[in-house]
Amino acid sequence: MLTGAGGPAAADSLFSHVGGSFSETASGFDSSRWQRSDGWKSGEHMNCSWNRANVTFRKGHLALSVSDGIGGRDRYSCGEYSTHRFYGFGSYAVSLKAVKADGVMTSVSHYTGPPFGDPWDEITLGIAGKDTTRLEISYVANGVGHRDTVIDLGFDASKGFHSYGFDWKPDGIVWTVDGKPVHRVSAKPEDLPRMPGRLMLRFWSASGETEWLRRFTYPGHALTAEVAAVTFREDPANLSN
Image 1 (cartoon, rainbow, N blue to C red):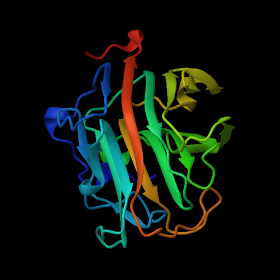
Image 2: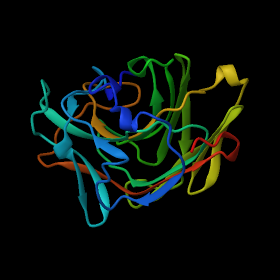
Image 3: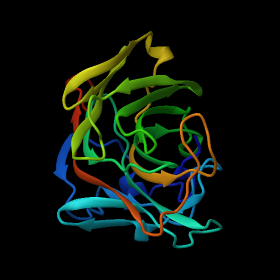
């Protein structure tokens, strides 16, 4: 996956080191930890460009929107909120409410790759707007992708806030929903993501119909995914403070 790391690719040296544990409600912009992506997009699978105007705060929540404002060369704009710092092994959780609409994706990614001078490592979870009762899980280890896992949630993720996350260790990843394990992979460390990466909260629209997303049709008003809280608990065996 191309990421915006490339698009203001190099983080300011003040923020380029690995970060430690944190827990916060998404009630306001914290520029010491987060940045709002602006003026580029993550690949041709998107029909929108990241726009800082599509990352706002309202009623105590982070709001990521897809709107018909022109972003870059694209007809639509969308929202990405990502950390300055890179985070390693540990437990991640994001409380969010997804959007139900064809052609959109609400997602959480932990990413690093060539734009940062690293191998491509990524851990991702996403909820496609075509079916918000299912969670899509994937990971990439040194450029090798594993993308075929879909979890039935047992609820509609667009109807309220739920916690989605993963517990990442050198020998495995366990994805969680509301604190309960829903999927796990175990492998040799060299076959799993191993590099610290940025945490990226995203809501975007697709450029065409794919296996995962139906074709996007703008409904005449902005669509908005919401985030209530973000937590990272660093693995005690890998303290980086």
